[in-house]
Image 1 (spheres, rainbow, N blue to C red):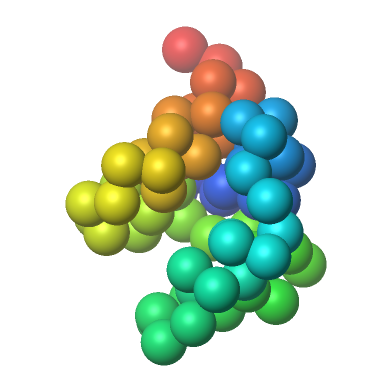
Image 2 (cartoon, helix red, strand yellow; image 1 turned 30 degrees about the vertical axis):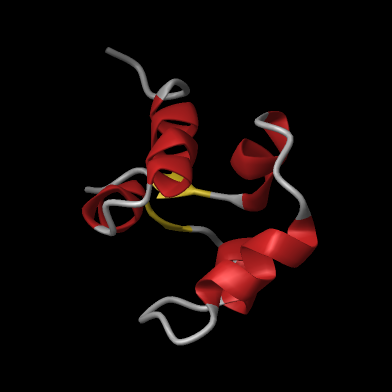
Amino acid sequence: MSVLARLEHARALGYCARGMRRWFEGRSHTWAEFVERGVPADWLRATGDAMAIRVAEEAEKEQPR
């Protein structure tokens, strides 16, 4: 099961809502989905976007090892 990355993870990195909302435009997961329930960290990582990968890593920090 994939880890879900949520708005709180992006906020912990200091990312702004306006930029994140714009980033989600035209992608297979939506801003609303990210805010309401989260998106798979694996998907964020697969975008290849450095900032998205950082959000995925932040979400994965919460997972037990």
